[in-house]
Image (cartoon, rainbow, N blue to C red):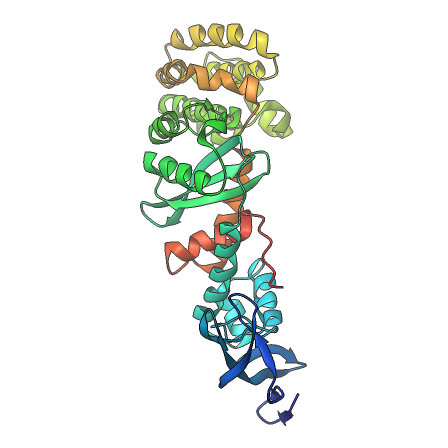
Length: 383
């Protein structure tokens, strides 16, 4: 260290570094030593010294390499074109997992643009190093990037329980883009044998085209959610003539064990009547019980329920039964793969909570970076 300057009024500490004349430096490209050609004055923001902002200043030499010509020497405390020390960037990365970027920028006294530059550098570098050579099980789900029809699709390694790819859109082309990402990171499309997704026709056709060896699973929670929607449609249609059904929506969406005493009494009283809603509710409970059966009994039980549903004369339940038949193999595949999109839905919830805290993101690119940060399990701290 050649000098220090401390200004308590400005709450600033400046540290000046230098090198000895005639010193040799390694080439950043090949490591061969060479003499300094000239120098450039550089400044880096460092971690605060108590409440005082700290800055490092140095004459950074440019050296001459026989093979690569003139190169700016790399310094051990910061990366080129950053303006921050590695320790300062490590602090930014740790804070970014817990705080919105605007809050980090205000806390550290820098612009949010510079914070995003740090995040982008380390996140994309870690994504680039991703090894997907062992990936065999994938889940895909979409999440809203902005209000309206702006979506991104999240692809997760279901065994490693982490997001491995994010891309704009929610159509079949997203599956094609994932295939390219998989291949470029050592994976093989033919090695992916299990895929969990919702019943989006775009996702289904994309998987069938670009992941030809994969069997699709429609997870039980997604299927039961669709049946819950059908039960609620029955209730909404019937309450026009049955006033007692008003304000009972959430009762029919719950399982009996989750009902309060008052709600259980209400269900018991209404179930004794010949309400269509009560019949649809009983059908839902029977359908859920099928998922507790062993796989060798599930197909027969599901077939029996389908016949019951298609003859129920309850329009929403009949439509659900028709949907069940159209996606029969994927629904029954759950009993073999046991895959569900609960992982992606949980990650999706974390992402949406972070978006709400940040009150949205300036661009889809920033939103994708935040998804990788929150759900990608990346090793991001600068070293």
